[in-house]
Image 1 (cartoon, rainbow, N blue to C red):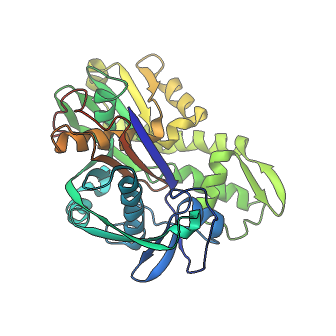
Image 2 (cartoon, helix red, strand yellow):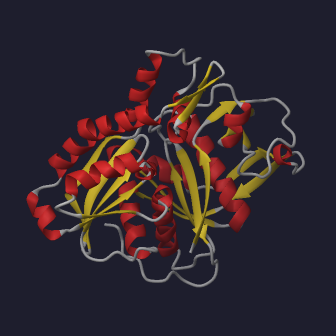
Length: 351
């Protein structure tokens, strides 16, 4: 139903001549902003020295602009113009940023990029036209994807989005969300920082950035001083500590016994849902209360929900609908695999 395109949410200034260093655009993102060159995503990881990104950055900051332009460029290369874009923020920053982000996106954009990185010639300019835009809370997008996407979830259910910068959760009913149950707290970054502190007790980390530590966290392996170090046991330990210190207390505060009375299902989404050790912590706590399920392709669930929302915005036409999840660890662009016709079912407003 969907095609998704993913790249790490990192960038670094780079004005060197890079030719034929990547197989395609998404792995060879080099953009220009105010005359300066920046490598983005996988290219920043391979060609950069210190790839980085601020956590929960504002829409007017450089890193958000570069990731937004990169996502729109990828979408434009697949769909052309105009685009209908839905994106969002965690509850903690949604009200603060939604208007600024909508105004930023809802404009004509000229994106300058270097096609030489993947053998596409030289610098190019592409004009990107935006037809409609909507900013919605990230976890509501997950609920939309669960109800209207592959899962076709019915009734009432909890959804927990385990993001890198922020963990989000709420109770979703067929009549809408229960606002009282919305929670927003520290994301996986909390566990990654714990791991970094543990490693620093024994090893010199060679000035590695937080995002480089996160990449090692995902793989379960880090290379330090030409030594391969297995960090899976250490990772499992800090994930359990993260659950006990942050996640469980936040859910106890947000969800009460009445909520569990009306709902018997909980879906896990986001990058954190890809760690079995963290999922096991949820199972242990809720094994006698809820049916726990990891969403299909959990990391891209929010992006797919944004895409479904975009199709509703433009009257059900899929051919220009884009879901753009500008995450703290990963940026994900979703479009419909079949670009013809209308969405499978009407999508009610998230509000």
